[in-house]
Length: 293
Image (tube, rainbow, N blue to C red):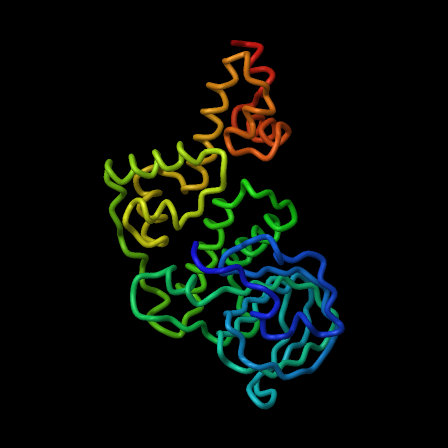
């Protein structure tokens, strides 16, 4: 993904309300084009100027009554748990929250939204109480990444962010038909795949943004993700993790390299991180691989 990290200044001001109590935010983590915050909100009524980012609010509990509009409250709905509040960048907002509410806010740059589809520019719809089980799971996954953040998860973060932007473009856009099937795409060519693999092998010990992989293949991020999965059957972050595990297994057979060094050379935060991933993927541990060599 491209673009600078978003900050609280890129949001519309809801999170700066005195009754908002953030539990965790992505501030300072270097997440490009994205700001995520999980909090408890007290009832309020306020007017906000347009922000530089698109806004998704997932209601974690409820139901709660919400009213919204421009220069007045023109729409009202009781929103259940799992409901979404969607608001586009650049538009002012008047909103009234009728009760205490736990929420996850996701602020996306317009650049990320436009990269997520092929076609004319999109603008998110103004929605109140929209239900989208897939988008709900993606936002909860973003919150999970935030809760357990490790820099080595950067590629995974890019993948989830791209999926959030893609679902927003496909199902919550004011342009185009929401019922159109996704375009059929061919997989990466062998030359493109070789270039991506060489990049990953060269930078195995560091986070690799999807934008860097896409640039090697000569594609946009959205095109790259679709064509990579069409060719390999897995998402880029899953392929990178598999490559890291495979490389770690090879290095572990060299008994002269400490396990902690193997972990960092293969892009894991520490030895315990490598152990968790190997146990989950292979049902074994680094020590067992080394012992059985």
